[in-house]
Structures are given as structure tokens and as C-alpha cells.
Length: 275
Picture 1 (cartoon, helix red, strand yellow):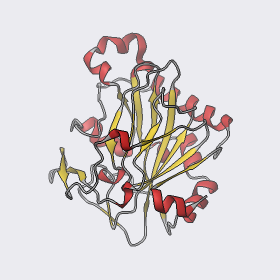
Picture 2 (tube, rainbow, N blue to C red; picture 1 turned 180 degrees about the horizontal axis):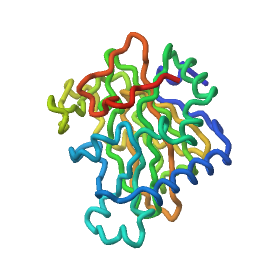
Picture 3 (cartoon, rainbow, N blue to C red; picture 1 turned 45 degrees about the vertical axis):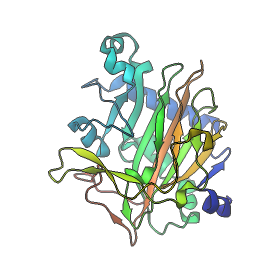
Picture 4 (cartoon, helix red, strand yellow; picture 1 turned 30 degrees about the horizontal axis):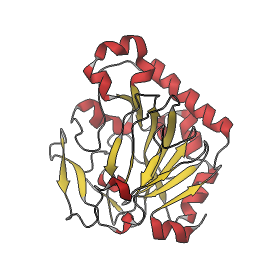
């Protein structure tokens, strides 16, 4: 791993971090969750205008389904094509599901975290993102630390391509070097814990809105992309006939780093557990 490249650019691609067999196992397990979980409500995840419902707020320490916007517009489609409408499964697979827990807490990931400089690496959030052919929606530019904030900031995202990721099917795009910018805004819980709001933490000190400045990160299945918590990144809608499934895990520093009490995700009944 090239730590100097990561420090300079805010991201790093590690090809072939996991085998294709492991990718298939994780996809199979994720689809089992899609089939087994009931559709209690059609909740849509957004990096810009997140609905502050209890279903989302309680998902931080549970496993729940989130859907494409099309599902909210046409709920009848869930009766015939539920799998195609699921956008994401989150957010505690790394703790509550035995397959994802075993993978997320493997020696190889702990070793990687230590190489990145973590003293006590703590996984706090995990997601399977299912970008289905033609309907997999875009994820607008954002910084992960906007949602998972510590003082001092310590978030690093681990993003595995479980299938080949291309420009056509919605690969990640990154704004190189933007991790040197301040955390622009944060998603916070209200004092009563029942809602959320976005708060502009710092003035905009880099132009993250010009999408032409971003670089696409195409990669093969099994590749790992490391993402600094302050790095601006996004993904486009899947405009192809090929799905683009991925698994992400976010790590924070458990030593000399304080989890913000107004983060949307709170440990509540299930404390964070270090690797």
C-alpha cells in the first residue's frame, strides 16, 4: 500500500484485496437479507435531504433496507420487483450478521487499519450498496466525515467493489486532494434525538460542485478503495445492463478521539466494538 499516495490524494486503490469467491459470498448473503427483511416502510437514503424518520435513525445499530427513489414514487413495484428496488442495506452488518462480521473483523482488515495509522480501529458503520442495472441511483458529492464525525476527525472509508465498477454502471468518482479541505457540513441529530438536520460547519474552501474536476475510479471486483473521511466523492446513476454491488465499512480512531454526541448514528443499546 502506498501511504504517500493516500496522504497526498486522499484515496488509494488496492486491486485484488479479496477473491472473487469472497465477493460472491458477500453478494449472496446481502441478497438473502433483501429477500428476508420485510418492507416496513419505503425509506430512501440521501446524502443531501435525508428523511428524519425513526426507521432511518434506528438503523445505525441494526440491519435495514433502503430503497431507490423510484420505489417511493411507485410503491406498487415493490410487490413484483423488490430486489431491483433496494438501494442499500445498513448500517450494522459488521456487528450483527455473522458473514459480514467475520469478513469485516478479519486479520487482514485489522492489519490494514494499523498500517493506516489507527491505534484502536473501531468500525462504526457498514453498508451494502446495490446499484441495479438501469435504476441504481446517483449519490451526490459528499464527505463521509459529514455523517461520522469525531474530534479530531478520524474517519476512513473502506469500499470494496463486489463486482466490476465502471463509468457506465456507477463507479466512484473522487476529487483528488480534496481531503485537505475542511469538513464543509455535518448531518446532526436534534437535541431530542428524534430528527436530523444539516449544518454548515465550515465555509466552502474547495469547489466540490464542479463535477468535471472529479476522477473516475474504475476497478475490478475484489478491489478495495480507501477513502479519507474529508475526501469529496460521488457516484453516478447506473446506465448499463450490469449491476455494480459494493460493500463499505467505516473506521474511526478509538484512542484520543471523541465520537460526536450529535452524530446521527449513536451506539445506544449496541456499543461500538473495536477490531
